[in-house]
Image 1: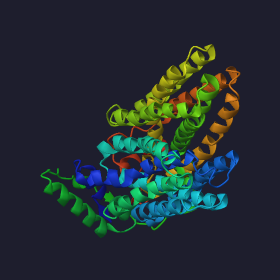
Image 2 (image 1 turned 120 degrees about the vertical axis):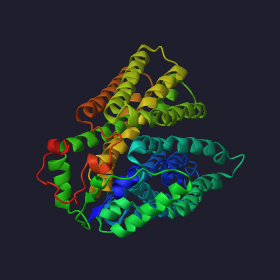
Image 3 (image 1 turned 135 degrees about the vertical axis):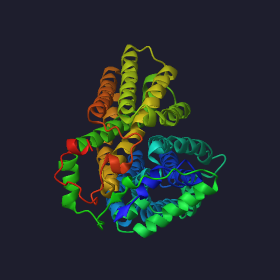
Image 4 (image 1 turned 90 degrees about the vertical axis):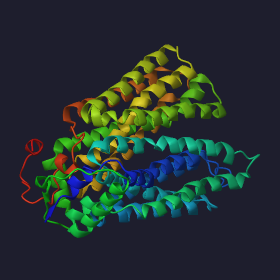
Length: 481
């Protein structure tokens, strides 16, 4: 079949439809931020009689659930469609998180935290795929990066909520943490209603033989745009894409895509995801220990330092995101990774000399992660746009899973390096390693990055179902088309 659906979607002006997509799908990261920040406050420790190790395991099992959910739902997203999965994964999260609020024993909490994590892990694959395929090419970079960065907005909301919900003078000890579990599901109920009005990706439908349905969806979107008084440019018939539909991609085809057709892109995606995950987890999960052990702040004081740290992470993607569409992906990824690593490296030497205070050290973190947050968000953008549509969700899920597993070593390593705060050299070398890792990620992006700004997804990576696609074509040849 022949289709102009991708070209029609990319030539759309920004309209109310796109805002619906941003709000309806982008809320996932806000929910994840709220969830982790509220639950990490561990208000359930005394109520459920849990040790510190058991509280830590509750966080670990949530992350394990994310990995499993990403792997399972990523493949289903490519096979069954974006909409079916972004409804299913959100519903799974809502149910599991709500049930966890009724926990009376640790094992019950673990089970439902794992299932809630599966829902959020599936969201990463389904939502990123849908956003990239529904947003016009010239806006795709800034939208995807801004949405991924909103996690930190959710974390700030969660931090504020924990201040009140875990204050036993305001809310009973056995009730506050349970209410915290219900905040995400209550917000999610509103969003799941909105998601019902977001259509399936017309691009996905075309590759699965649903050309007529895809055309109707695009017709409706165009009609809504015209109703807002916006003109639509004509589409050149030469941009038609010729497709031989297929139901699913075999495991053999998947291996062929990642390791024969696009090996350098696979290396790029894994490197970007792993390096940002290692740095983030290493610093984020130990910054409170650094403030307490080296700067002698009590836990209540360290909580206040979270807000500027989170603000830097939120503002970075919002301000720098548009530059990924104008300056370009390769330059901006390299620049953000490089600057994040250099600022962290500078703070490492100042920390070693003992000239930093809690305030100045936090300022360095804020500046470093202002750039790192935009870079980390661009990692998700990169892996979702540089592979063919038929394996897009799976690419996100596999690289996300690898990054989560490797990144989980960061808190363990840096927690050991912090120690009791008596020696600065071990943590100094840890910061050096984190800086080098991030700079290395930027160098890889500079060499192997793809100049995807302003290009249609089908121009960046041809669909596997495209007629006359040369399956024997090497990656370098493919990128010259």
